[in-house]
Amino acid sequence: MPPLGFFPISILKPLKGLDFELEANLESYFNLVYPEYELLFALTSDSEPAYPVAKKLIEKYPHIKAKILVNPDQGSGNPKVSNLLKVYETATYDWVLISDSNVFMDRDYIKILTRSVDANTGVASAFIGGFESQGFFGNMEATFLNGFYSRWGLTALQVGIPCVVGKTMLFQRSVANRFGGIQSFTYHIAEDFMMGVAMGLLGKKVVIANNPVKQRVGIVTRKQFWDRHLRWGRLRKRQAPPAFFTEILFQPLTVSAFGSLFLMLQFGFHYLNSFLAFVCFFAVSDFAVMKTVNRSTSLKYLYYWLVRELAHYPLWIHIALGNTVNWRGQKYVIEIGGLVRTVND
Image 1 (spheres, rainbow, N blue to C red):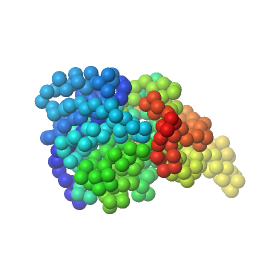
Image 2: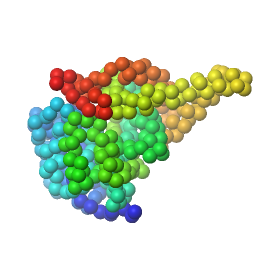
Image 3: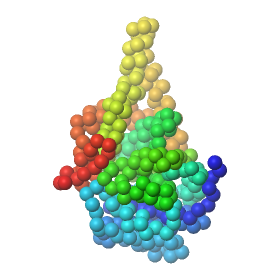
Image 4: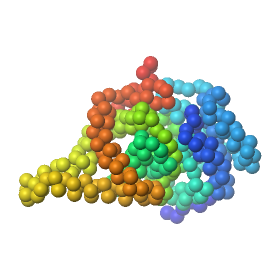
C-alpha cells in the first residue's frame, strides 16, 4: 500500500525529572518541519523540575501549538501510561505520537516516520540510537542500545515478531480505541509490546522507520545502568520466558565457546584460535550494526562491546533470580505476561 501522506499529529511527551539535555531535547520538537502538529506535555505535578523547562519553551515559541497538562492522579500500575492518560484523552488529532523526554528529534524526522505509514499500519515505531554518551556506563548504555537491542530487534523483525519501541509510537486513537486505548495497558509494564500485540490482533501491522530515534545518553551512573537493564531483562523474562532462558545460549561468547569446541573435537582445529576467530566475527558484525545506528561510533566501542558481552552473564543471572524492578523511584513486581503492581499493593 502507498504511504498515507500528510496528516496532523498530536505529539504526547511524558515528563519526569530532568533527563540529560532535556531543554535541547524538548526544543527540537518546536523546530520540526511538519505542516500541522501540536505538543502536549504530561506531568504529574507543576513542582516537577521539567515543568519550568517546558513552560519556558512554550513561551519562547508562541507560534507552536503546545500546552502542559498536569495529572496528579497516578495509579499503582505503569507510571508512564498513568501520566499520559490526560493528554491522550484531550489530544486534538486522531493520530498521536508518544515520544519519550530523552529523545532528540531531527527536524525532518516526523516526515520520515510518516512515510512508513499506510492504511494497514497499526503503529509505526523506530529503534533507539544511543548518542552523545559520556563516561564508562554512558558508553556501555550506548553499546547496549546500538548493539544488543538493535541486533535482537532486527532478528525479531526477520522472524515476524512485532517490535514496537516505546520511545516512539505513532498510531491512531480511533484504532486503539477498539481495544480500549492506552488505558488498557495501565497494568502492563511494557505498553509498547502490548501495543504491538493488540494491533496485531486487529489485523494491523507494525512498521519500523528506516532511521533510529536519537536518545541522548550523557552520563549514566552504575546504578542507573544496572537498574534499567535489569528492568528490561525481567520484562523479557516475564513476557517470553522460553526466549529469555535460551537467550544466553545465543550470546556471541557462548556461541564462540561451543562452536570452537565443536571444531576442535570434529576437525582438530586449535580451540583458542577458533574462539578468537568467532569472537572477532561477532564483534565486527555487531560493530557494523552499531555503526549503522550511529555513524559516529568509533573503534573504542569494540572495547565496550567486549565488556558488555562479559557483563551479560552476571546480569542475566541477576535477572533470572527475581521479578522486582525499580522504576522512577518506585519498586514494582512484574507478574507473568508483563502485568505490574507496586510492592505495597
